[in-house]
Image 1 (cartoon, each protein chain N blue to C red):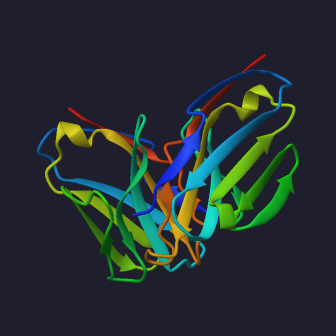
Image 2 (spheres, helix red, strand yellow; image 1 turned 90 degrees about the horizontal axis):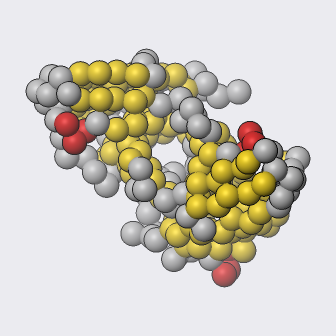
Length: 110
Length: 111
C-alpha cells in the first residue's frame, strides 16, 4: 500500500511565524500535491510538483511556497503565517492520476 | 476550469438504508476518483473510475463519461459510512494528473 506521511496531525503557530509542513511518500511517485480544505469549499490545490526541483502553482498559491529537493519529500512553507491560513492541509502523491492522501495536518494560526 | 458539482450536499440516513450520490462535471475527463473522508479527516480512495461500473463490497460506482456524470451507490449503510464523499476529476483541458474536486456530500448514518 502507498504510504503518504505528514509530519504533524495538529499544529499551532503564531501570526508572522514561518511554518513548514512536511510530506513524505514511500512509493517513488513522481507527482506530489498540497491542498487546503475549508468547510463548504472542498479541497483547493495550492501547489504541485511533477519532479524534483519542479513546482507548479495551483489555484491558491498566494502566501505559500514549496520545496522538493528529493523525490519522496514535498514541503509546504507559509512564509509569514496569517490567521486566514488556519485550515486543514492535505498532501497527496501519484504516479499517474490516482492520488493517495496523507492523514492531513490541522493548522491553527493564533 | 472544469466545474464539478456534487449532490446532495447533505444526506441523513438510518442504518440499513441505500443511497445514491451524484457527481456532474462540465467537460470531458481523463479520469475520475471517488474518496471518502472519515470523521478524523482521513481521505480514503474508494474508486478510480473514468468510465464503466465497479463494485467493492457494499459500494459501487458508475461513470457515464459521454453524459458527464458519475454515481456512487451505498447499500445497507452503516454508521461507519458517515463522513464526506468527494468526487474529483482530471479533465482533458488541464495538466495531466491534476484533480479538480467537488465540494462533497456530507453523509450521516444514524443507528
